[in-house]
Image (cartoon, rainbow, N blue to C red; front, side, top):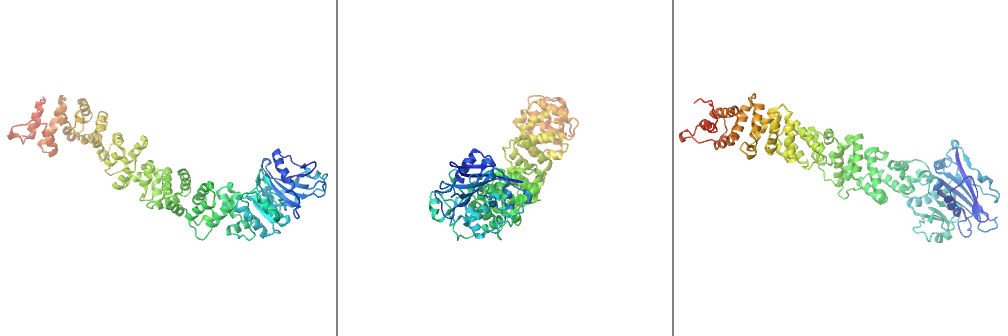
Length: 636
């Protein structure tokens, strides 16, 4: 059941409300009283009865009134006004009701008011949709609707008689209030400029002879021309709004947001709908058109929502548009960077696209790689990099990981993708160059280094040190301590040469014999840093690893010998014997490189010229000179 309250205004010691079935707020009553009074200073032929409509927001209803001139009253200029109060929530039922103007009743006298104290009840279940406007003039409806939708400026329509447009305007109001504008205000018989809070009503019908005087003081008064052409967008709206044949524009607007179901947006959205429905769509032009037909404050959101509809939501007239092509065309347009699409917007909606249609995002990304892109294209790539996970990188870039270095540049976490470190050496080096030296997250650095050490088969130690500096060396030592595979450790041992001081400091704490071997091979026993190491460190290492490790017979003696020869301290005899005896055997069998011998030779005492060829003799002499009393193995 729909309840329509009512009221009667008339003269009784002044013009005011005489009867009502609804108690209004004081504000609404003050608003209505002047609008329910005579619309001018003197009566005009043909304008003795007219309709007025205005919203009463405080009371959440619309006031629709019919006014009759009351010549029977003693005082000149008196009128009767019957007002219907239709709740905003019931406006949607207007198209199904019989013409609302049939509910108006003129009183016969000021005593005939009792009927107005009771509401009017309409059975909603019996509404049959008979209010189709079929008896109204299409030409008049077009003439009135076009200026209403063209702008939000007040419209003044000249007429010879209120009957010229009375019912067409009431019908238009019923359609507008249902779909687009429950706040639309009008008067079909304005003998002066009628206003609400000093603002002219949206539409006023004025006697032809009073048009100039009534509209004179209204800035930007909109006076429509009868012969004005009707563009295509308007024809579509007419079919929908007046003849109720489809809901294309309304549904199109709703795809953006219901907040745009407003009269001011009907024309721009109809224009946009028409452009998107054309045979040939130039998406760059479409987005440019939005800037032309929408206000600056609306442009950003309209463009954003259109892009979201294209990427994710979908809409019938947009089904033939390839979303990847749209984003590529926008991202390669050299004349616009589309600043309205900020990073957060792109991140959220491209992420949603990835969740809904990952193949689409892959196509979008791959179409931008290797293309001259604008700042929007850059923001798209940054946005994509922000939400994909390392394990998804392969899916976004394709089997050849095309463009992965760009994504890694913007999101270092993507360097955790295992496939990156299975690629050729030059590819891996390119990825390392994308990693900023100033990464603050130590855990991320460690995770990346772990992935590289565990996966890569290429010698990229220098590039690794260039990217991560001392972090690379430190983490290598931690990683290698837990490895039992000598080949894996040796692959990365060149890192030790790049900062030997770190390795030297770690020596007393090492537990992995393979790591110790790699470190020793990377250190220079003649350097001041190595020589500065306390003797106790080498003694501890010897007893920890070397007694039962035959492989160190080749590595440790050659390393320790120059340290012992340059030291002022004497080493335990078992260590000295091990070192000198192993080196004696190596020299005797000519197993020492010439360059290594040249360095060692400078530390050994000289012998007679005829024995200068005997390297072993010089070594034995050095041992004796250092106070070591043991016999070294010799064949001669």
